[in-house]
Structures are given as structure tokens and as C-alpha cells.
Length: 292
Image (cartoon, rainbow, N blue to C red; front, side, top):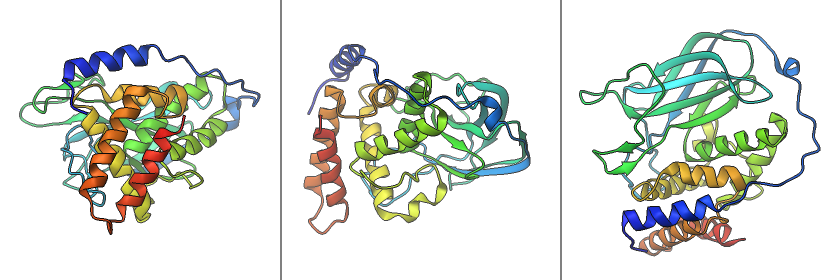
């Protein structure tokens, strides 16, 4: 589907603005903040980050993208009921060419954190000014960008991953908590929704853990989603994809997103040989997008 960037951005803006909010009723009581107030002293949190905004679409389903060396990473402690930041914040940088980062010897008052990466790596042309506010259009690469993140419970894992799947789920978690879900229930629901949205219904969400890449199918699907978001970013903001999923828990309810993703996936399917292991996952992804 070939359209101009301006025309496509206008279509997306009109359609997504018309989307209504989620209207589910919630009966589960929110967890009290005291129930989740724990002390985590002198811990180390390690992770890996995919840098979608800085990468070019390789259309590879098995190569793992990495954030550039010097990419800023922020870890913010979250209120266990509202998911608001508590004011406890730590910063780090991605090292080398591996996309890995670490927060060493940190102490927190609660177990929930949001870890985000900046859309740019520090270089001669850009230096971090100490704020967490960025120009969300990359003029050098002619594409829209965003900060990508993950929300995790550090009692369950301290080796995390930031990628396209965690980017979308983070928006859904914030939305469900605002609707009154406890974080535990919101996480359970969002896990199921994001897996269904990409054709992995019934499988366990493990994308927030660095070890998820050991699952070949999950790596393929995350790479497909990353490629789709990168292609989308040439026309409109990736935040529109994240907000659409955040509001509805689905990628199929927004017509522009659904049609764009299906068109791209069909092109990639035709480019691959029948023996390529990605074919089945592409077909399942398309089927999930076409469910309404």
C-alpha cells in the first residue's frame, strides 16, 4: 500500500482520534500499596534493549537488534497501585555493541519499575541534557521515534528485555490500571492480549525477560513486530500503535494499523521461501490482525 507520508499520517490521526476508550467493568479490588511495599537494597538489575528507532528494517526474523552504545536508559520506581513514578530514578547507558545495560547497587522501596531507553544514542551530534524529554522526530533518519520501555516486578526477575512487545504491553498496563485493575490482574490480562494480538494465543508472555530469545518462535514474532513498527514510523508515530493497543488490547480494531500491518506482512511472506520457519508465524500474525 503506497501512500504519501502526509496523507497516511492524516488518515491515521483522524481514525485513531475516533477510537473510544475501553469500557470493561472491573470487579477485582486493587491491591493496597502496603501489600507491595518491600525493601530492595543494594541490588543489580541487568538488561538488553532493542533500539527500534535507530535501526533500519532488516526484514530478518532471526537477527536480534541491539541498542547503540551510549543509549541512555532510565529506571523509575513505580507506585504499586497507580503505576505513577515515585521520584526514585536511576540512569545508565547501553554498553558496546550488545545493547546491554546494568543498574548496579541500587535500592528501591517497592518492587515495580519502568525501564525505558532514549530514542537516541549519545554522539557528536547529540548529547543527553539530563532531562527525559526528546524530539520525537529523527530528522537524520526521516522517521518518527519514541522511548521504548518495560514494566517489571523485580521480585520475579532482574534480567530484563526492552523490545517491541514490552513497548506495547507497557501502554496496556497503564490503561488497565487507570480502569481500576490491580497491577497483578492487569499484567495477567495484558499478557494474554498481546500474545493473541500477534498470533501467539495461549502461549506464555516472556518478552520482558532477557531469556525470551531462547524461544525461536518468540524471537521471530518480536522481530516481525519491530519491523512493522519501524516501517510504520516512516509515516506516523509509533506511539499511535502503542496507544491503539493500550486502549483496546488489540491491533485489529484500528483500520489504518491493521491494513498497514497486513499489507507489509503479506509482502514479506511472498519474499520468503516455503521452507522459511517464519512463514507460519507470519500467517498466524495476519490471521490475528484480521480477527475483529
